[in-house]
Image 1 (tube, rainbow, N blue to C red):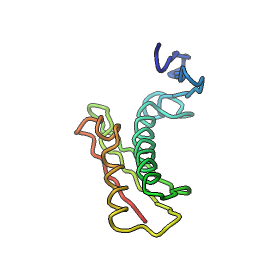
Image 2: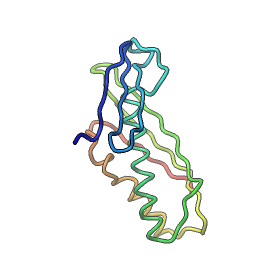
Image 3: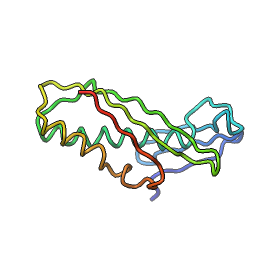
Image 4: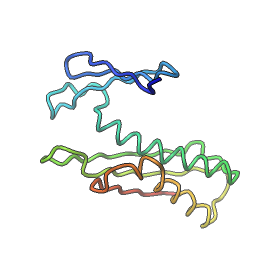
Length: 135
C-alpha cells in the first residue's frame, strides 16, 4: 500500500493525499517558476518537512527528559539557486519555550536532536542547513 497518492490537478498544481489519514496537501508552482504561488511549492514542503522533522525529534527527546516544549516555534527561510534550479539553503530559527529551566546538557541534546533528524540526514549535502536556537 502506498504512503502517499498524488494527482496532477492541472495549472501546475498537485494534490498529495496521505493514504492512512486522508489528509491532503495542495501544491502550486511558485510565481517565479510559472505558477500562481497560492499554495506550498514542492520545495517549500521540503523546507517545512525539515523543520517539522527537527521539531518532532526535539519533542521526542524533550518527552524523555520530562520537558514540555509546547509553544516552541520556528521560522524557516528557503533560498533557491538559479542554475540549476534547486534549494541552495534552508535556514531554521527556533524559539524554544519550556516548562522548566533548561540545563546546558538539555539544550545540547535538543540541538543535536534537531540537527540529526531523519530529514536533515536525508537532504543532499549541497543544501546548506543553517539552524539557530533561542532558548
